[in-house]
Every structure is written in structure tokens, then in C-alpha cells.
Image 1 (cartoon, one colour):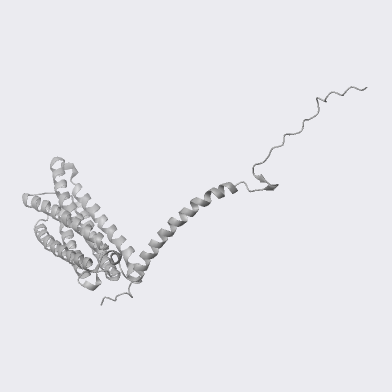
Image 2: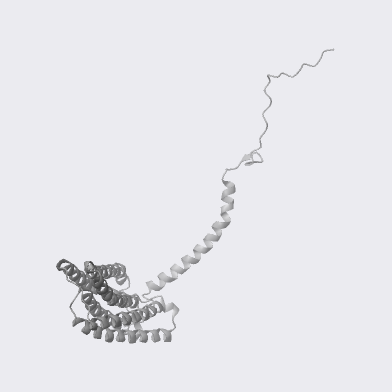
Length: 285
């Protein structure tokens, strides 16, 4: 009788069988298949949201393609005419106020901020006249072509005005013109600042309702006039306590001129192509 041979210690044991979870029924699935399946549901939801945004964009583009502003879809006819009349009244009020301020400012020729205030008052009158032309035709309240033409004219006026303000500011800085503010100019600056800011807020509100870039631009110009009115007082007060900072007035003038210039250039870049796109939609005539 033979004894069983002991197991060979040098023998290599059979390797453990490892089951790959990606192998199903003998077929190997891609490693990222599970991840793709998990992404299917979110992708479906995102597709639904994207479709909604696409619809809104198509609606907006279709409105512009027909030569109309977005306000034509939001305002009823009687509401649009009511806001149009308010825009006309605000423009007339702005013209009256800024003419008085311009006459008062032209009597003072002491520093660059006063000079900038004079030009901005003149610019405000011109921009308000352009807005009056924009809304003079009741049938053109939603006309995109008329809106864009008004914006192009405003852009040109802004650029010309800014060049004059910057030129005057650089001249005053080169000649070291010192700022001076008397009691009359002090009163004019306060009245100008408050009146222009109030007009700017009203124009911004009407421009938002009527989706009018021209009205918003006119409001921006009024806001700049208000800022310049207060900047005169600030520069004079700083100079009174710190004579070494005589250049603050001219620096503010250059900054305001550059802001107006940038806004005018941006307006032209945005509106000139749109004028060409909507030139065939003047059906209100």
C-alpha cells in the first residue's frame, strides 16, 4: 500500500478568478458605458431648457427682423402711446432746464469742469431734440429703424462733444488754470446736479419700458451732467484745502470726456449695422 505523496511546496497555486464587472454574458462592455447612461437623463433635461432659450431668442430675432422693438410685444397700443407722450414731455422739460443751465454756465468761464458743463448742457439739448424727433411720429413708436438712426446721430454728437471737452481739459492742464467757484456758480452747480440726476432717472425708466436705447442714452447724458455739476464743487473744495491738487479739475474733465467718447463709439459700433439691417422696414410712413 502506497502512501499519498505530500503536496509540493514549490508548486504555484492556481490564480484566483477575478470577475470583471464590465463583462456580462461573456461580452466586454466599454468602461464608460455606465457613465454615459448616467449622463443621459441630465442631458435630456438640459435639452429641454436649451430649447426654451432657443425659442426666446428666435422670438426676439423675429421681432427685430420685422423692424420692430421688443416693446411691441409687451405694450398694448394705448400704453405705448401713453409712454410716448411721457417721453416727449420729459424731453421738452429737459430742453428747458438745460437751456437755462447752459445760459447760466456760459456766464462763468473759470475752469474746465464749467466748460464741460456748458458743453454737456448743449449736448443734452441736442440729444433731447433727437429724442423728440424719434417719438414725433405716433405710428413709429416701435420702429427699430427710427430708433437706430436716432442712436447713430447721438453717437456722432457724443464723439464731437467729447473731443471738445478733452481738448479744453488738456489745454487747462498745460496752462495750469486754477479752479474758482463763486456763490453764483455754487448755486448753478447744485441746481444742475440735482435737476440732471432727476431727469436721468425718469429717462432711464421710460427707456426701459419702451426698450429705447435713444432714451437711455439721453438719460446717460443727463447723468453725466449731474456728475459734472457736483464735480465742480468737489474740485473747488479740494483746491481750497490742498492747493497742490489744482489739476483735479482738469483730470475730471479728461475722464468725463473719455467716458462720453467711449459711449459714443460704442453706440456707433452697435447701431450702424442695425440701421443697415432695418432700412427696408419703414412701414410707418
